[in-house]
Image (cartoon, rainbow, N blue to C red; front, side):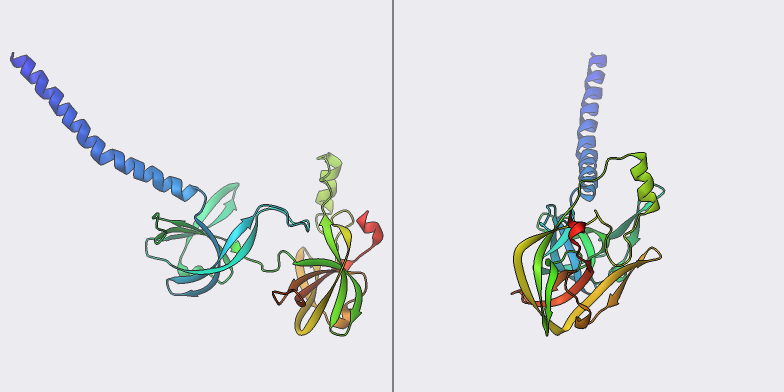
Length: 273
């Protein structure tokens, strides 16, 4: 009888201990797993820094463009939505940037003073109401001129305006991975000065023309590759010529006046074939 009572007491003790263990340890494990999952999952918000004031950051809300825009540009580009928002960083917010070192992704911790205007931020919230920020990942700097609003070939240059033939870019199919092609890529990895190598940018001209006004504040530039680096050179309206390939960004919502014109070389009929 005593053995039976002792056995019963031991079983009761084990059940109580198991219950306490489940109540105390398992919730921590679940919370820890959820925390790790949230840090490695898709971010809750993608944005670009507009301005900074202490712990408050005013951001442009952005999105990733995963489809071609019809002008031959690649995937995964940042696009601003036109909406702004102010977020607050607390002392519990982790701010990091990532880099590749020895074939591995390495995170480096930052502070709010390291953030700059036009930084691209990936944001994770700690709560479902999206009031507390748990993590910010800094992913480079946004380039407002990475995708032109118009690509064209200059047809005519007049005082204060240009007329262009609207064009699109058709990307050629990538060559097969042969040893000859790989060797050629290694020996000639960069576009030549003043434009693109034949076969890199195939322009398809449309039947549409567009007249774009040029104001005193319009920025006109061209790009050159020198010593492995890209440099910009400012131009004047008089430097624009017929058959120039131009990338255009507008200064107004009606898309009548150019804010920026980039000369990308000279169009040649043979280069489009």
